[in-house]
Length: 272
Image (cartoon, rainbow, N blue to C red):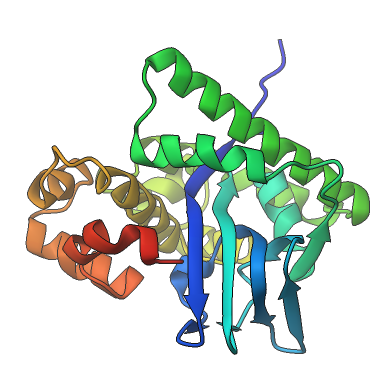
């Protein structure tokens, strides 16, 4: 039996209408992979060597780990999605890609997936069956896009495959238990490494620290929980393993730049 691990963590997404006030420098929340399909106007993505113009009616893959700045001179609107793969080899492969890649619309219908995306994020599916189908459609979309990217840009990770395999037990543990307290020593032990060496290998492999990765998972879940009107901020804080809601609010604001209560009110007007 083969273990199929090519699944994806959906972070957030939707539809956004922006103007010249959209001017962002790289922060921790950009350490993911992005899909933008502009429906009007133009926007710009910059890395440390050049600026890329995103134009209307084109679908773009963006390697958020490499971007330095995002901005708009006038106005733009876009459909968008942020994600990370759970499979380490896929993750590392996407990390190695260029900052911006234009994807072929004739083989990838991103627009049709936006309703499914919004239902998942807002938990408005009418049944568990519909919810499962929405997840399957988004997973299929991301699989198709990943395959297209690696077909366009063949890569070789053979030199890094040994280290990647060594930290996989820790990745699986974090993906499952990120809501609980996790110590560096615990993760290193799972991989039969010293804490310092594990930290170095993890950072070199994923371009972030283990603590950053756990925070990414927690903050992603926070965005999804904040769409549930029946949950209070205190409920969400305890659900994510924070000691109190004040700690959660400070962490959320530090990560996203706004308090969780404000995000609840303005989430449709925010492009993270």
